[in-house]
Image (tube, rainbow, N blue to C red; front, side, top):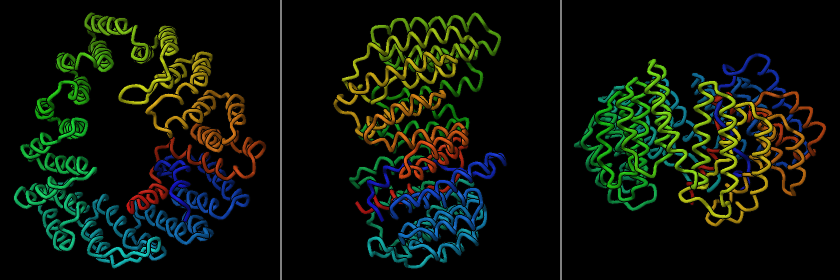
Length: 557
């Protein structure tokens, strides 16, 4: 098994239910691309070939080509990688409603108990709780070859029961959920000091709505000191909110020490409440943060919810509560409310709010980054109203402002720059020359961005491949290849070209280009990138073995 670093270099695939998402023609072409990637592994070292075969096996299973998926898994030389391929195929069987086949494949993995747990969770998500419990009963002590350690059955069974218990509670079966949680607590009796056991027990009791049983675990969780604690407390708060135990859910939210963590937790619970139509309680969450600007994300959700309910006055009331510095959220809200007024045949009110938004945009001219962002928002609104020429003008104004940003300084709070949004807007507006101008400027300032202090190295290193992908998106493969060929280390650029061609569904161009121009040592990686792009674009539900490998590797740090 290669290092974690190499796994990180390979962009993990998005998830895909390929057979239902693709037409017959697309399916045939995509399978041809995957086959080409597999054939090109003859140019690779065994370790690198294993990665391609692992991803290809996952995609074949996604298309229900199980025999081919198993054949590819059998070609993987590394025992652990081969195990992960069988794991991935088993999960595909489980997701597609065939747990018996999934369970039979679990024997081919070095992580049988983990696979069985995952299968049980798939069954529970499909509403087959009885089947999930039978699968959990099959879990036994399991040898994990990678670290010569043993995963104990009681730990795995207890964790699986808690996951199923939470899903039962979400399905409205709270009594059954509580019963399973009590069983899990007994199984986990040797782990009652373990942070993750405590957190999951606290969460499961929260979802079951049992305050008495859950209070001990919540108290134990609060006493822990760990970086994961805010996320765990958020899960517990969401559980109590789901069980309609609002008082304790709100109390947990009030106890966050870090305002960033508190804002994220409040937003998550607020979105849950709005999904139930409980605007009153969602709005009550606004009183929890000490500083007004921590309310803004939830306020924006309330604005959007009010618009969905066709209540412009209420939406405007929430928009008026944004922090004074949250200009972009205020402008976006005003434009959305104005659009609602148009829908309600209230043109005067719509014009009034649009004018207010325009005034806020003009007032931001001296803040070049903000002004550029606001102009892209304005352009998006113009495009929604089919005013293409005006949108093109707004995007040119955005680019003009973006040219005045000091790119040698990292932006406060994040590392976002507005150039990608400008490019997307120009493509949508049909302004391809303008889009090329934006990309040319992005290449020009890239060296300045690399000098910026505080930026994430991965973020910076991904910018040029992202620019390459944008050229491919607008059909300028020649420029994309020119940039790529000028790079000494251009593997990621080649992969981005492949992924973008796949996302566009341009398999013919991808195959021809790959066979004629891509070095033999890169062909397999590029072709599997084409498949990955197509699968991502379909928002499919394929298993992702690489994320699992990464998660398991991080569990030992």
